[in-house]
Image (cartoon, rainbow, N blue to C red; front, side, top):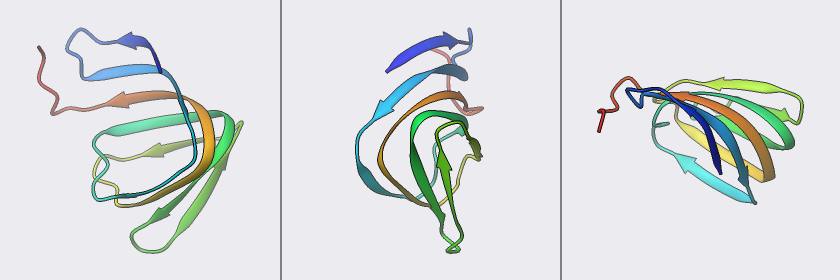
Length: 89
């Protein structure tokens, strides 16, 4: 993990993230996130059953509160996250 930028109020950050295999149920995504995948892929299956596979060279935006399943064999992504509720420390 590498944070490249963080706003003064700590509500926005951007960086690189690398993950291995996982299959995770998500009850409520914690923030708004833009992801651009540099390698690997992820399958996002929404609570309503719709799914999308995002591969290297593709991007996706995930809204805060999204519910579903995040399944991957591994990936590296560039991300930008925003959380309006985050309190500055």
